[in-house]
Length: 204
Ligand code: SF4
Image 1 (cartoon, helix red, strand yellow):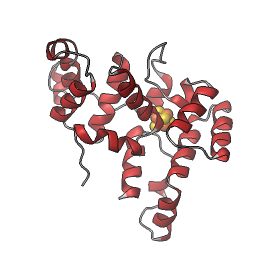
Image 2 (cartoon, rainbow, N blue to C red):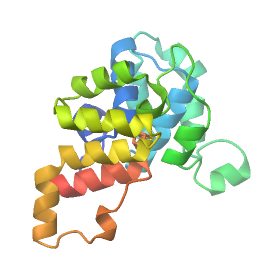
Image 3 (spheres, helix red, strand yellow):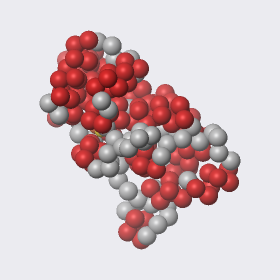
Image 4 (cartoon, rainbow, N blue to C red):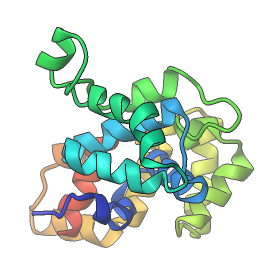
């Protein structure tokens, strides 16, 4: 299986959808993320199988400008809460909050200035979206043009799936040829954790 650990998140992030790659890049650039970005990213990491202990290590080491005291006082509780380790009874019984779906990310809490959460296909302007895609290695002009049209038509899922299919072109072909994945498994992605799972499945 995968090594889902704090020190491996940089490597794993190559299989993350653009929303989570953007959070990861912002975190590495600023050694910080604002509240809603932390929540969106923490729940995603929980969803890929990072356990609470590793998640706390991940945030502690990522917030490299903070002292242990600052981290413990201001951030530790929220991570534990997201995992259902602390908080009210129903939160604890349910194992904390569920990772956010695309629908939720696309429609709730749009990011304000200085915030990195949300869906880049929706919340970035065209120019910044193209720059982000290029920064994560997508330079194919027809893909970038397709994404632009999807965004203009407000078909943000289509844009995300278009990029997924481009990045995994050869793996998808092989999976189809060898019947490794069913049509349903290759259906449109509507959850960031599904994006990761499918990417990981195809590459390994
Ligand atoms: Fe993330 Fe969903 Fe947007 Fe893709 S469509 S970037 S998975 S929120």
